[in-house]
Length: 429
Image 1: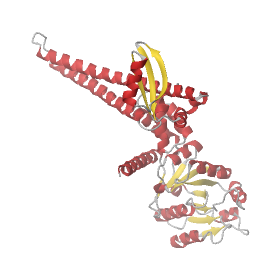
Image 2: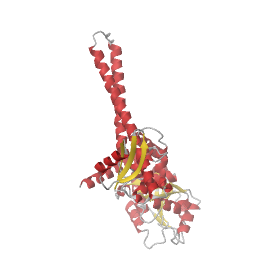
Image 3: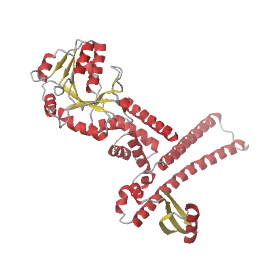
Image 4: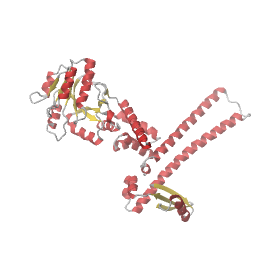
């Protein structure tokens, strides 16, 4: 849908311009008298459904097609006026720079003017150069913001009353980054002034601040740690990576592995394979050996890693397994294993299923398989679960990393850039 505004001294002249530039298929959205004549707002390929989508909540007040068209015209006027104001600011910077440059040349060739002192002249020249460099950078950033404002199908939404266009564009970029609509809007609203690139950097800093991570590594601190999560999230493989790294660093004597998965046939075979390879004992919780009894026997171990069954709330044994972890008299630090390839709603659903186990944090897996990482970072920020580790491949133990907020956000930004480049190549092809 292409929307355009026309001005003329008379209605006949305005309609003639519409006919010449837009053709016979143009739809008149609104017409009104303005200073010096009339104004007409027209559209090509006008679609009411598309107009309602672009207007968003504002379309709720449109009880007829005529009212909807009028709202669409008002929105276009606001966006165009905002662009005109930005162009005026850019023009002012250019004129100021040109005038200052002209006065400098005049002074340089004016023989009657007193010669400046070398010291002050150099300082003045440096100051002027600095001022104009700053103004030039500001002008370029303004142009970049204008381009961002005009890009995409949602450009019309930026001009809604009470909504800052930069905030709207920033929220859209954060959503593309992978954050939820609510979190994107919340971060964007905190950017009360300035350019889009400034708001983007500010939002990333707030995200890095909001994502909590574990300061100490389990391998050095020791203790009892349990990994919970749905089937396929990577619990057992992550335990294998942790165990292998611990053995390489501290040896096998002070490490033990435990599994509570007695609900599936041959569920603990993979953990036993890790145990045999690393020469580490593996214990199974069952009807004759409770979790506390086994942990009592392993009290001399520096690190105990507990693997659990990937059960959902509908599975038999789900409540029993989580209650066993929660009521243990040992200090079990339970961590939720979250796959970065999961949808945000699934992440939240999994968190609600397992939070009764008194979660102490989370582990992010399959980072290498995710298209964007904003979903995982947003989940960590919204749930306030500290991120202990993340995995980005199948190699043991190379693809296990201790989590730090700033490197994770940087990795997410790189992943977004890669996705955008791939999309650009695909569109070009």
